[in-house]
Length: 379
Image (tube, rainbow, N blue to C red; front, side, top):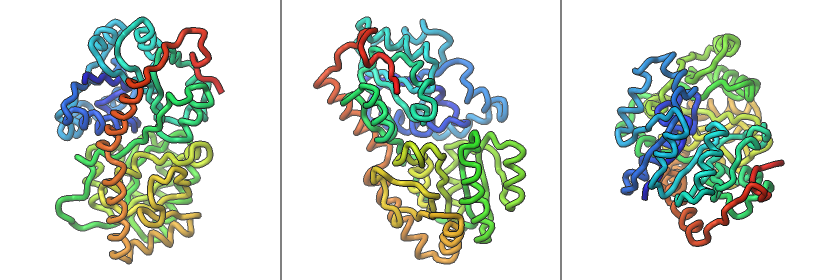
């Protein structure tokens, strides 16, 4: 099968979490014998920031760990149209320009034979629905949404049984426990500062509890303003800067535990959608403690795969207990790995994608016209 994925960037994971999942899925497709091609725009914001901060060396980890993958950059729609010729499946990520999303849909409406999917992995459908409404999805056969609550949003917008929940997952070819255990110490958090979506939560559930539990804390990520770095310094945390995602397993392997601090939109409006770091951390065999988050879809076994803290004081108690109890850490690792290996690898997600494609092929969607009520999502 010839599969083309239009992404913001495959090469760069600088503040671009979808690249983690995309790399794992595309690599799995390659290993199954599919012809895979990724397209990304010239001047992609993520890649430009990576190159500005780290130069070409910032791409070394990606290139070393994903030799099977490559992406082609395009400057205009004509190049995209040429690249899609002969494709069987085309997937367009929501972090693309509306003009590009619409242009690919027009190709499909005009008779292009590929199956066309729109892939949404963000909270904008609830936090900024106007931004999603700018996408003209006429001609798209279905939507892939990275959580059931997001799928429900699209169903309310008229997509019915043509929206499919497709969670992120861990690339277990890369994210797995170390071959040999070495010394572990302290706590690690890998995540970007964001735009004020969880500032108070980070202080309450990460910085202060780590200090109270006397656990050294290493923090990796980008877009940390001066006030954020000052907050880290007040709590004795060490800011390490950007970490290429391909190097996350080696960093997890040096630490006793990690913490999940979800953004508010995923707690309040889109419950059941964890960050990809939860999948990756559990796959690497590191104990995890989560700030309040409702696993509405039963993806994991709270209390068994990871611990949950209701407030900062409970987080500090959990961290201190893990610091002092190797058996408890080992039990969490075993359970978390069991769940990832049974349900949440990129191989599982490729199986799910193939099932979606088979279902669409068995019951092909009607072509959408410009006056069809499904033309553009609306709240």
